[in-house]
Amino acid sequence: MKKLSILFLLVLFISQMNGQTIDSLAINKKLSYKNFIVPTALLTGGIFLLNSTPNNAIQEKSNAFFGNEFSSKIDDFTPLVPLAQIYAGRYIGFKPKNTVFHQTVDVVIANSLTLAVVQITKNLVKEERPDGSNNLSFPSGHTAIAFTNATLLFQEYKDSNLWYASSGFIFATATGILRMANNRHYSSDVLAGAGIGLLSGILVTNYNPFQTIKFGRKNIASAFVYPQFGR
Image 1 (cartoon, helix red, strand yellow):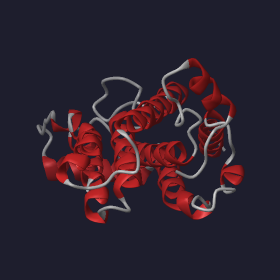
Image 2: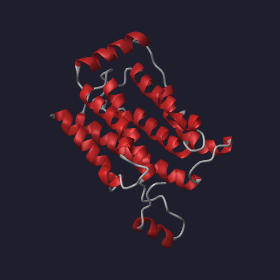
Image 3: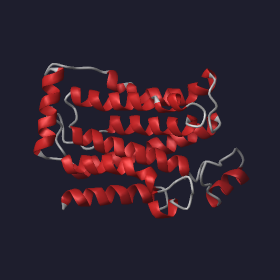
């Protein structure tokens, strides 16, 4: 029951933070329930693995594979690689969907949303980390941010170059694996973080009330009155 409550609160929080429910977002023909299958599956899987025997078993196998002394700081930087790719793509020769300004608006909103959801959930669940350092393990913030930026990258360049657009998920996945290898997170934390990141990226790129902001008082005011759908 507790796990179901966490799932319900997470989905409700994400939808309400964006001012729309998943059903109302489906008004946009480019955004349907199919867009939410993968992130919801990841999030649900993470929640049901939480505090379970399989979760502990997976972590034990991870420690055995990487070694108990494994330590790397690479996972502090891999979440930022897709972010850099968002801005670098246009200089490589790929055509982005948006200007640098509007890319930045999406990045700020999506990452802020992800961090808010992650921090609130961490403080609600209070799961102890595998290394015992604190009780803020679930979900993985590094993984959530990595998948948020990877999703923004994908949405930005998927119509220009699918390979480049998808490459961010390599670094996002590597982030999750490294968080487990460093004994900082369980598989449940990583899966839930990935789900939150995907959801945040999808929602913000399809419904962002700040996306039409331009410099000037009149233009800024109109952005709040007339949110745009389906970029």
